[in-house]
Amino acid sequence: QVQLVESGGGLGQAGGSLRLSCAASGSIYSMNTMGWYRQAPGKRRELVATITSAGRTNYADSVKGRFTISRDNPKNTVYLQMNSLKPEDTAVYYCALSNRWVVSPGDYWGQGTQVTVSS
Figure 1 (cartoon, rainbow, N blue to C red):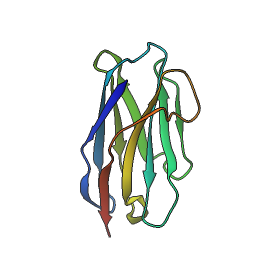
Figure 2: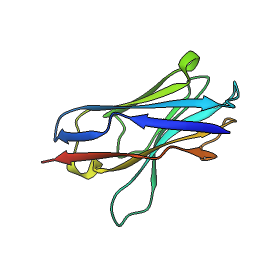
Figure 3: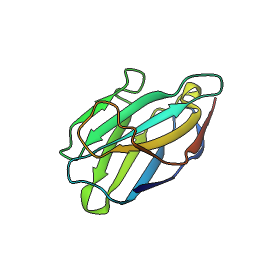
Figure 4: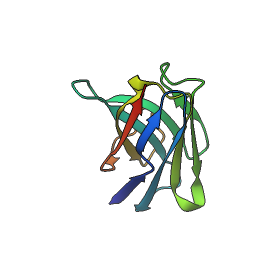
């Protein structure tokens, strides 16, 4: 089993920055993919960014150039640096992990952290 604990959500201002963290623990394979999803009220959950244990990253078009995903492998922690925030970034952000290299990790999920961006 794998446990994921997110932190760092909260209230931000348009144009500002927030940083999310997700710490993973448990049975984590050396080859894994971690990622961030988000779900706004009334909308489907969408993939925001992913990063493999080898450092390969992928981003949704809506966040390219504004968000940066990174990870600390020894700490099994993934980060999402969110810059140039927009009100439409408001959502619950979820961390996810799969114990293999995949496009859309989702075998394990965190509890979610709320991000609210005011205009």
